[in-house]
Structures are given as C-alpha cells and as structure tokens.
Length: 149
Length: 70
Image 1: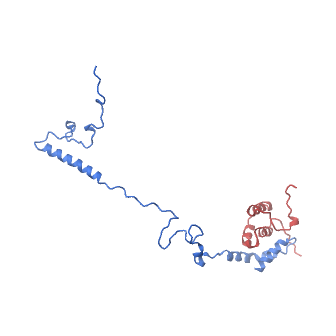
Image 2: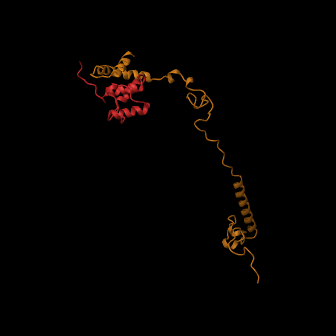
Image 3: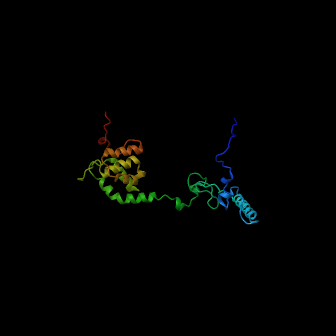
C-alpha cells in the first residue's frame, strides 16, 4: 500500500491563486497568472505590464520612509535652556537659583500689612471687651500688645 | 463698673484663647479663627490642641480647669 505524501492537496497559502499579485483579467481561466487568449503578441505585453506593475508596487513599499523618531518629551523640571535656564529658578527647591534672586517687590510678604489692617479694624471693640467683668488678664495683656503696635 | 460679663465661648473668649495659644505674632490669624462659629468651647479647644499640640492657653486659668477624668 502506498502512503500519500505529506502536504498533499488542500488549501496551500503559497498557491498561485492565493497570491494577490496574480490578478488575471480572464478570471479562473488564467490560474497561472499569465494572460492568455488575447491577440498574438498582446499576451506577453500584458504579462510584462503586470510584472512591471507588481515590481513598481514592491519598490514603492520598500521606499516608504520610516516614521520619524521624535525627541523625548520634556518634563516640567527639565532644563529648557535660554534665558530661563531652569524652570525651578526663583523657587526654593530644585534649582540652586532660589527666591533670593527674585526682585524684592515679588518676594515681599504682604501678610504684615493685612494683619495690621485686621487688627486696626477690630481694636476698638477689643479694647472695650477688656473692660468686661471677669475679663481674664491674658486677654487684657493681648489687647495691650495690640494697642502698642 | 461694666454690666457686660465675660462669657465662655464668646467672640472675645475665642480671641483670648487663640491669641494666647497661637502667639501674639499670629494675632490676625487668631482673630479670623475666633470668628468661626464654634459649636462649643470644647470643640474650639480641641481644634487649638490639634494644631498646636499643646494645651489651650489664656483665660482665667482658675476658671478654666479641665476635668480630665481625675
């Protein structure tokens, strides 16, 4: 008994009919991919055109440029160069150039002015409350401190 | 003699406790915190102790003795 060889029959991925480049104008009649049935001399001309077309498509695919590689994305703390050499300049962290390099009008603390305004607004009432019966001495000392400022 | 009495939990009582607990240098902050409508002097004192890590200062100490279960 003879054993059939392997890979016999069935669908083969490498079969000519599975090659998308083999397009036959004659449909199933041209399974080999070769044109036939045209007038004398035109078969070879069409075949040559098909081969050249496939080669052209292959060359275009080969010549397709690769996606250009972009530079790595910068983070907030990267050195960006130029006038502002470091984004953390002026802050008291990261860069050695801290808030001491900032202009005085920027680094000035406005809180004392705000505090003085608040205290001046309420001082008359605070002084009046110091005259309450049983007003603790600690409160009176605090009011005296505010009045002396 | 003034007819007005010093009331625990009043605005001025709050000012006294905050100013003496936070320090006179933080007087403005003490005034702002004193204006918060605290539910009770105990709640206010708990807040002060939580931010200072110390007992509440100020007030008439003899009238401000806390009962810590003793």
